[in-house]
Length: 352
Image 1 (cartoon, rainbow, N blue to C red):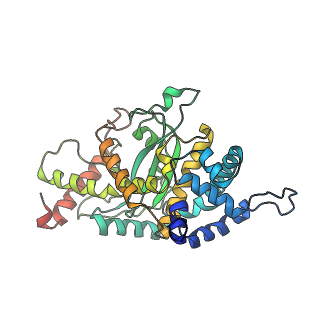
Image 2: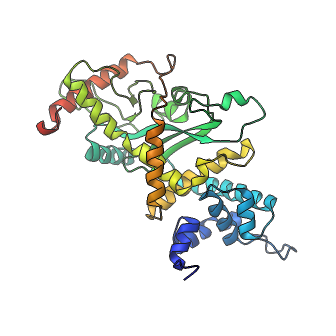
Image 3: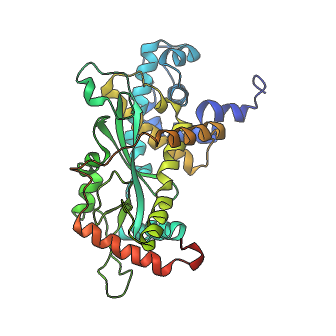
C-alpha cells in the first residue's frame, strides 16, 4: 500500500492507466524518447520518467510548477519533456490510433456498427466541436474569445458509434464557428471529393442511393455528407427522425466528457505558449483512444461532473452561422430519404 492506496490503483490515478499499459506505451515511444546513451549528463531523464511527467501533467488541472515539483525537476525541464513527449505521441502513435476508415471494408464495418446501435442507415460517425481554454494570447486575442465567454481553441472531432475518435483538428481560434471549421476541414474535403472510401446504398426502393455521412448538431450545414435535425418539424415523421438523430449524436458528447475526465488539463487554461497547445491537445486525443482500447481507468465522479457541466453549457447556444450552416438541396434530398426509411422501419412502439 502507498499512502493507503494500492499500487495498481495509484498507477491508474496518477497516469490514467495500469502499469502494464504504461510500460507498453513506454516501449512504443522509446525509439524517439530514449536518452542518448553517450550523453555525459549523469542526470539524463529516462524514457519512463519522461512519459510519467507528461501523463501526470495531462491528467490534472494543476500547473507546470506542480508537476516539476512532484518529479524534482526544473519547470523549464518539465515544459520541454511534456512538449517533446506530446510531439512524439502525435508523430508515432497518431496515425495508428486516430484515423478515418481506410478502405471500403472498414467503412462498411463502421456503418454497420452505427446502424446496429442507433438505427441510422449509412452514418459512420458523429462530428462536433469542443472549446479548450487557453491563456489570453497577446496577438489578436479577440479571435480566440469564444461564445462561451473565454479564450479558447475550437477543436473539431469525429468519433464512431462507441466514442473512438477518428479525426481531430485543433488549429482554429475559439471565435470561429463550428460550421466554418467544418467547411474548411480536411474531413469535409475528403467527403466532398471522394478521398474517403464510399459505400453508397439504396435504403428504399425507387429512391436515390445514400452516401456515407456524419451526424452533426443544428450548428452544422446540411449536406449529403453531414446530416442534422429539422429546425422545425412539420409532421410526426420528422419528429421521429429528429429524436433518433439526437440519440445517434450522443457518442461525440460522451466521448468529449470521457476525454476531459481522463485528461483534465483540457478543462483549464493550458500554461504553454499558444503554438504548443495544439500538440498537447492532439496528444490527449491519441492517449484517450489508447486508454479506451485497454478500458483504462476513468474517474466516474469526474466523468459525471463533466457530463453535467456540458449539459449546463448547452444553455449557451451555439447559434447556426447564416453563411456556413445553410441547407444544401442535395442534403435535403438525402435527409428526406432517411426520414422515410426511419418511419417505415422503426418498430411501432418507438413511434412518437
